[in-house]
Length: 205
Image (cartoon, rainbow, N blue to C red; front, side):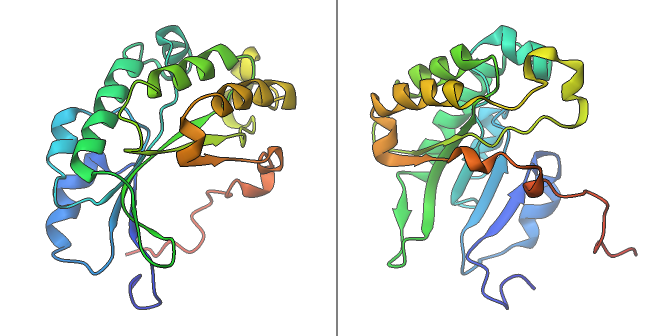
């Protein structure tokens, strides 16, 4: 159904727990399959996707274990995510675009800057600089919008300040990562971009 109106890819969002059921149904598709995930994956899972997923879109949320434990209860996130991203690069290969500039294979690593956690973001850039040059794309995001349970965590219970984002952006500009990547404008942080998650449009069977 997605292919008929001209979808450029089939995007699986946080699909790890359903991969054994999803992937065998695909067969050979005329468009890339994307794995869109939070980065906390095992190398074994990524290896199992060789030849089945062409594009990986992982987050690299944390490079400091204490920050990962505070917000995601996963103190080993930095090591696990970095290993998974390296495996993704090995499986997908370097970025390949078609004649229209649409990604056909490769890895885009995303990182969203959090308020009061710029040290974590700077460490993320440091860690990613250690990966093979030119073998992945990087996306720095400014779109953090406090909602949900953010009020329970005073450090992130406010919007990101432009000064905080600019500090990270300056470090990024001094690295090699932005030559193969993207950065967001501060206007990206807006409640209007957050879906209502009210299940409207979901078919009941």
